[in-house]
Image 1: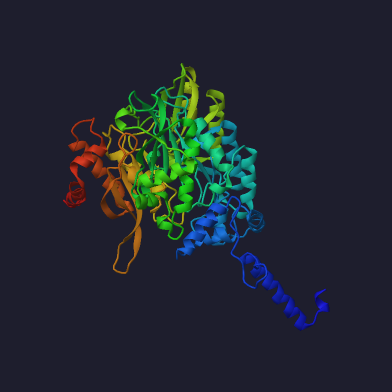
Image 2: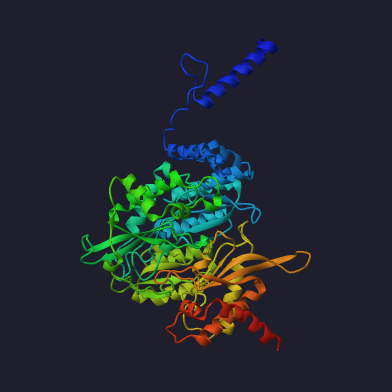
Length: 595
């Protein structure tokens, strides 16, 4: 017993225990000598990450704090401790907030003193009973509402610490998970929202998205990347999945005769999309069979794990490895992982992608199955109450095929609706305070969480988005084509403002000599996606939020006055007008207002 030892003996034992700990840290003592042996080779699922960290340090680099946190205590191994501490109602320390994100929970203080849970929903498709079950969990453990995200996913907010694990347990009961939906992991797998019901599609992405989802979930070595990672599958249908904004995009294409490979449907590989860093994924020339997508994506990610920047979080995405190496070197490393060469096809031997429809996620559209339809329901910048969710689940069960299909446009589709019940669905949706119809401005209105629920956001994006839509609907009644307006709160660009026709990114606007600020935005124009992918051009900086509806009105009025015809898109108009002419519109408007 400790009380049987004198002070000198206690000091000896303390020193001995410290010595044992030091030996363990350094890998043990060399046989027959007093010097420490070289640390043993890392093993297990985390070895690939530990080796990458070790190479970084050996080269003189300083690991980012998040890398140190991962190494000090793996978020999966620390799970039971996290649960115990959260059960007391305690807010997490920064390093534990990071660890909780591996399990899908994000502490969002000071915006809200609670957790947000982001789910994993491969291809964005839920059964009606899962949708209703999430509503019940949001009532029992959260704030009684949910948000549809730009990755065709759901977020539930206002989850108190002690309710975090019960919420996650409830997801498991529903056959769902949030594992790896945050932090340095592969995010929700997106696929074509109309997969399997779209007459235009070349390939049903549902099996591919689900297979890749399960591949990720069951391989711990794919957790703990240098930074987050996005993968998307596009089936070539009428509704784009925005795969060009992902680190890895697989696009269904039709390969023609003479390409050097068997003609038919293949997947084209595009790499390096990260719209918040002003880059879209580029065609690699590589094509692969759908069945090979998992192995190729796995190899791409392992090259990133081994070579991504673990010192600078701003440069730790795959784009920056591609920038430093070039695509040829990166693909050569991928082929080395695979142990084989990848097939390549000249774009001249690929059939053009069929046109997409910007209104395909809104309203009634015929499915490939005779007599059935999908109906796109518009949500006010992605938000639903739990009562609405349960009622929508009932509509899906009684009037459709029982599925809810989330889209990257922050809304969802009810699918499998017979012709005879379309009117009933529209009426029941309207009775919930929602709509299946949208104006040209609301059809493409996208907004991130904003500063009401995110500490990074500089502005109330969702609130300002609705004000812009209200203003435009009242003042530009003749707008007859869809125009996408994206509002994002910070440089993370969760709402992908750079690909909007009009994109707004939150900024603090100085309004006095003393440095007082108000909420506002920098504004870009001319972005695009799918048929016309492009990063937008900034035309105005530091516009007060209260002035943004007027600025958007000015742009739209100038578009209607100067377009060459209804066939000229807003993107084409901005390219033709040029940034200088567009910048001058603000001065013209102010002069007109002063007269």
